[in-house]
Length: 433
Image (cartoon, rainbow, N blue to C red):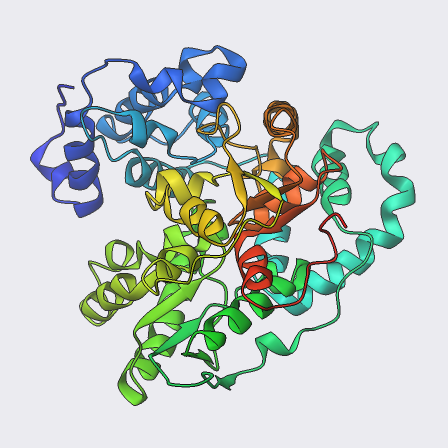
């Protein structure tokens, strides 16, 4: 794609990076076939190629974002299926990240939208606040039908639909400290507790810790770590996202220097995609660039790390698993085979749902802010998963678990929970008897 940025514009490193990305696009349109919003809406501007044109025009002309640009950028799930498909290697992720930051700086959203985004940024990254909000949601749930009559309250209705009716108690898995390895110690890792996952489903990290320590891996929960910054990053609130990244880089650097780390384990693939990008996010920070790059190099999805441990083969257990590959796993981190191979080695029969490349519609807070499109994608995903006739669904992202669970009666578990059970842990209550 030909560009016409001025030397003055290219003096901005963010613009210079976006210009390089734009020049790689050859207008081939392969991305349209795998873009969930284009497949759903059929609008060229809701395809990666269409959004690239909008971003190019906005940045080239150094103009503030307008309603049209914001509408179509907001509809992007950041699923990154387009990057998997693109034959030219267009780095759409960093381009749309730049566009969102530009939107946040130059566009004044309607009041209801501003309030919603501020509420989500204030609540979701903080477990105590999120826990309190879920309890409040249960109190307001009876008024959902009333809220649904007002268009501005549609996101609130979506939040109530996603909120669990019961909030699990605070888990010991979030308590800072070290969980010793069983038998001969073979490695030492840190684990991300995160923000939403320990509130919605603390069993995931509990199972992960049991599994790792059982195979000789010491697990440390560092003091002071918090939200990875994904949520505000995808809202374009870059300063908040970078502050979250710096905090975690400091925490994990301390652990690296004090006791050494072989890996930083992440059990939510959406967080993993962001943490693996810390090196890029902080590349211009002279204090943090090197430390952030080191943290990113150590970040590993739990299945990515388990694949290096050569877990023993188990006999078939009679259960069939439909494996849902989260977008942040397959497109963001390019991890496709490890989870399925681990499940097969552990004794499960694994089936791939049709259209596995398409997003389930969760995408962080997308199912709250774009409920109509999200609902269509969820229905399509659930239909394909149920067609496998599997006994249980496995995936590696809490957002997908929450989203898909609201559309099917099939049990859905994190891959680590199934592996923990297969290798000696407790049987998950959700599994069919």
